[in-house]
Image 1 (cartoon, one colour):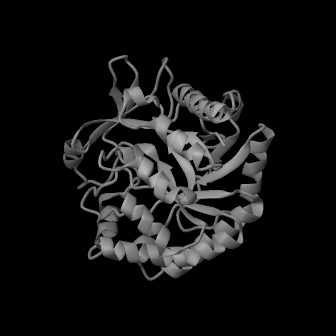
Image 2 (image 1 turned 45 degrees about the vertical axis):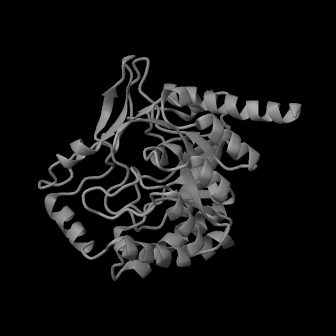
Length: 347
């Protein structure tokens, strides 16, 4: 189901414009003003779903209900917070929203060091350079970190980092397992497919552990609670930032647990350095045609969205989430998918 991320009524990209993209059928969205740890109200989910459907589209996935930090580091309030998360999942299921993606990255979400990296053609894109990240001074708090959707003061950040003292990868896995054992049965009962998003980038940053960073990690995640509801979001850009990760092997091994696809391309510039480029495989390192073919052959029916486009043609907006390049990416994905079907007809 070809879908597009939409940030709600304040998004510069309107539902009306998204609906004009050929073959676009779904919307990925959420209730972005609700703080982590609070229940997503069913009536608000219904209203959001109705708004999307009035534009002729389907609410195909929630991206995402934030996992509270206390759940991740295993704090004393985690059971109460997990109960609230379970209620949000119930509400999603009762409203009829089929997929929930989430992540388990400590403190920092997806991270870039430049939101306006200029390409030779004059377009701009998101970029990550590890050496640049190492130069970031957090002594005054997070400030406006590139890609950062929240801000912490120096005191707040110090308190959070202190909570993660002694939380290594093994402990983080245990806390993720604890979380999954509570929410997967709820998701299964209410018809919601969970899709964990890989860590982005797929390595440790700022000295904090990250665990969803490889094919082995995704396989282990699926084994923690062996349920069809416990799955993954295949983000070709997040995983593609590490050349050692074989995206096709992940589809081959875990295809039945791929519930959501973020289709985008990256170009590596060296060890832990990359920028995001146009979706076509010729521009980067991600073999998107082969990925789409593998998903098609596995009978994938979940939402797939063009992710993190460049800023082109003078567009101004949320970095990575403009209309024009993502619309081009959607058309590229549609062409690849259609070609798979035509090839099957001829064989």
